[in-house]
Length: 249
Image (cartoon, rainbow, N blue to C red):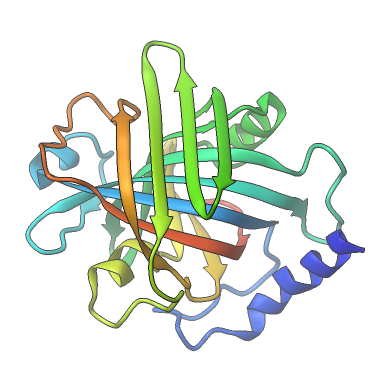
């Protein structure tokens, strides 16, 4: 019953569209999923260095005079294809994404440098469907006394560990804020021959600032220096996300 309730709630996100920067894409969405226990960590990075890593057709976006590198760790629940219910045991897994913020034409979106999960089936399926750079890794996300803890490790010394605690009340990001810039993104970009785009939809993020520390982060591109400034930290409890198929950008 829980899976059915979540599937209904995922589809219900289509009724909330006033917050979107452009109209909802017509036609069937392809994949529905729910993200739980999200941790966001963001660092300022040099825009020119990010631009060097992007494919033709994408332009790095800046806020407060900087480009931003983000790590998003979360628990995926109830992944399903349109018109189906989640399959037990294979529709839930942990995930960690390394991303930055870009634009192609009039549509701002997300560019992923890497995506990691312990599930080899999820990684291979998503790699085929969305042409994204998926990897398998060891990844644990847990909550202890209100503190969110993330520990990830992939081959070649790629590691991320963090311990954070939320502060305040979950709330949507204010218009024009850095949080709105970082979180309210409604498409992703990928490269499959030419530049491709997949439309996304979700309700506005309800996030809390967090305090704590990222103890180690070597998941991002080696070309991007993170400096000594501590990362901007946020957490979010739950988000339902719908995604459409890739199309030429």
